[in-house]
Each structure stands twice: as C-alpha cells, then as structure tokens.
Image (spheres, rainbow, N blue to C red):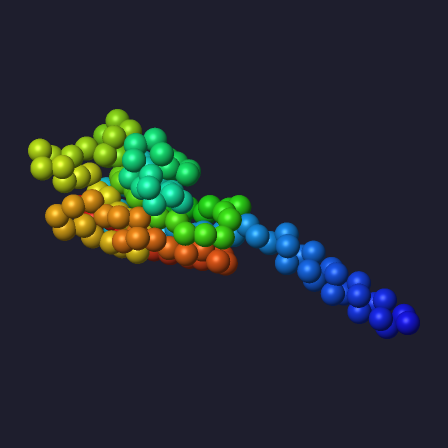
Length: 142
C-alpha cells in the first residue's frame, strides 16, 4: 500500500511539473552587426494576418547595441508559431529607414534568415515553431 501511495505521489508530482512548463524560452542571437551603434528593434509576431503590420507585433523589443553579436532571451512564450522581424536602428529614429524602392537602408533580418527578393516576406517564410526551449541565429543583412 505504501508503494502504491509513493508511486501515485511521484506520478502526480511529475504531471504537475509537466503542466507548469507550458512556457518556453527563445534565445535569439543576432550576428553580422558591422557598426556597434544604435539599437536592435525586434518585432515578435504570433498572428500570420498581422505579420509586419505597424504596431501589431505580439511583442516589441528594443536593445541598445554594445557588441558585434547580440543575444536576446525571451521567456514565458507559449507553444506555437512565431515570426521575427528586426532592424538595426542606426540613427535612433525608431523607424526602419528605406530607399525610394522600399528597400531598407539600415541592416535588417528575419527569423529563418529569410531574404526577401521582390516583396515582403510572409509569416510562413519566417515561421519558427516553438514546442520547447529553442535557440536561433539571425544574420543581419545590410
């Protein structure tokens, strides 16, 4: 009887632990920062319909650049699909500056290191599935 009670307690404790770990951590390493100045501006999206829409990111992060490779850790993320867009704000105007063709003039990047050719990327182009703690690297394009 004691064995059954002990087994029940061990199983119950294990299932309680499994339920409390629904939140995941995403470690984002940004490389190819050629000028150590300004800030990294990240938009984390979890809704395909709102991807790249101004002020529609699930989470926004601004991080002052202090070295040529930066790491940002996001904690408490639920399991699901996310897409990340970022740019290096060299002139601190909180805008991704573009030329007359709509091409960024400041370094930028997307999750999955997607490089758009003739149009903006879609959520699916940049989608990462978060089912457990994950580390990704995004290389800035300039």
